[in-house]
Length: 73
Length: 324
Image 1 (tube, rainbow over the protein chains, first blue to last red):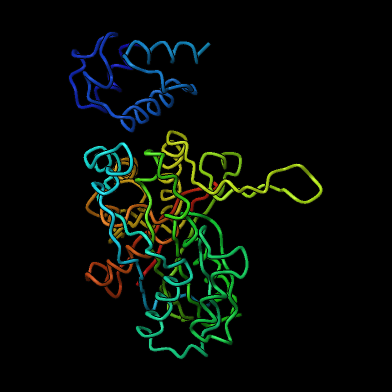
Image 2: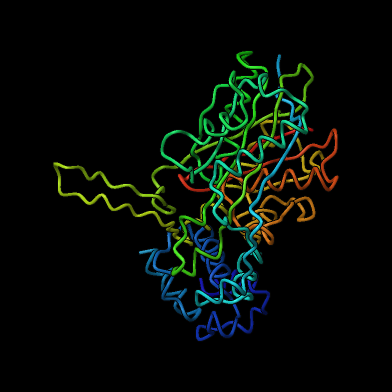
């Protein structure tokens, strides 16, 4: 799942997949603003067929992965 | 069979311009933050003109451009969520101001889709043979509903009005196809002008909560998912392809949202018209303000074919295929 999430994030932010780790900060490292994050979440929702809430607390790529895992449960 | 041909377009926008830097003086924001997230650089705010004043300005311009006698106007529809009064309607105030004593006048409330909904209604009256012509205006003074302490919303909206004069024709032109929808279950994602049910015999407050509230993510989600579907469905219904379209005119809410819509529809950005840098989001007025600008700049000419697509509070959306 992490691999696919990395690809979606790389696609939206224009970064290399290799640059993206669980520790990567969405705002400071990827320079993604709130609208980029909304689009990343939407693409992930479509990809994994889940509904993701509480996106306000997201700081790192790891936070995104955790939210996707918890929304699949 | 009758069609509704667009004979004239017109606009009336308050003179006062408020830049992002002007807003940064009263709320914690800056030009880079606003323009990178929305494409908005300036907006026009009322100096005191109300919605009916600028709507009347539009009606007068339409009368002059179309060369019609106000006595010959059959129908006046104003789309607005920021009327001067709950009653009389803005359309009735406009009717009084221009002396169109033979017209039927009423308002339509569908927020940022309002102009599309209004034009759709006018088209049905014309198609059915009930009326020969109509003035349809989108008019908003949204600044009176803005919370100037909420930096997430007060920077996004502006004031303005614009509209069209449509007339019955037997030629296949004007409004050719439409696709509209509503999703009231998500209505609380964008609200304004709440009026509580207080009276002398209950203990409910009569203090209205006027200010606009927007759940940014919910609206982003709605706009980027629903609008591409609506336009795609319209194009399939009408049997047109991207190559048949000279332009796509979306509601002017946010340039980033428009870019996503363009990508999802695989319609190149150079077909999309945008002017939110100058006006911000003027709700029901945004599509006709841009339409009038496109006509004045010669981007839309006789025979041009394009899509208008509105989306907003309600939630509501509507797309139309039009030919000039």
